[in-house]
Image (cartoon, rainbow, N blue to C red; front, side, top):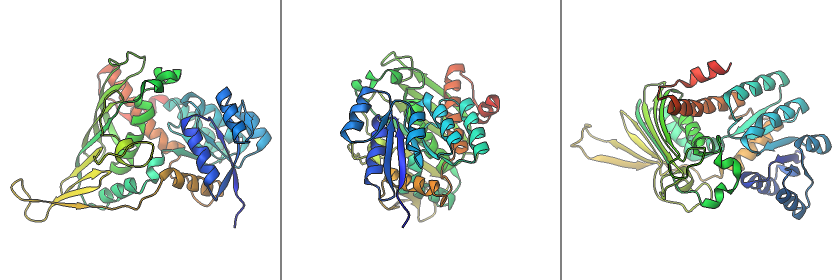
Length: 352
């Protein structure tokens, strides 16, 4: 049996601590150390009897980990990942891959030069529910897609915004939350060709949005709408419907609806609607279900990262792939700012 890998974590905030818990429980790896300058992180590491460094470069130099999980604020993803590439240390980079498409292109070029594998933490692609929805579309179970609906509606508590960067540009639900849903929809339905959008910060008045409405055109022809708000009591979000994270009270509701010429699928409850007789609105609809296996996608993501570090698997979500998701989110922001229809492809061309 292979020796356990030594995996370090940069950033001991909410998601960083979740990664640390998973590493501690994993049969594949052990915690090599933490990098985080905050006093709270120092106390956290001391309580766990784990080495803690104020700077990730010191951690890389002193601990020489087999891999690094980058769970820092978005603007630090690029410099940390570049330092990993230079040190020859594979990294799991929390989403978004970087804070801008321009920086993502810098990272992609550095990764190609260094030949060091990088995995991006769009962890929901590891969820069997998302994989099953993708398979249903790819196998033609719904026919060609015509319409896609996405909802991300919930209320974040006030103390969530005590962290300053969450009140500033890049810290709102577009880049923190919607990016997950955009990645899910790209993975399930294919690339997004055009975006129109409106955003609002009316509820809290922060420099960043609290609500957004999107209109999408997919490359394969389907049209989609996505509505986002982190300021409303509602059950329609991946967090509350999927049961993926036990910290959120699970609601028996969908947050995506995928509709094609042969049927429709609601996700994550996985109800499949179609006609068994001659189709038409007077005919009775048949309701079936798809039942994926239950699996914690963060556990599977860590297993996959360890396999990537060992060279046994290729990254499921590369920096280049994740840049495509980030380009859609930037297109949303640009469309809301200008009132124009924006192509994510043009965003990447302009950043080159």
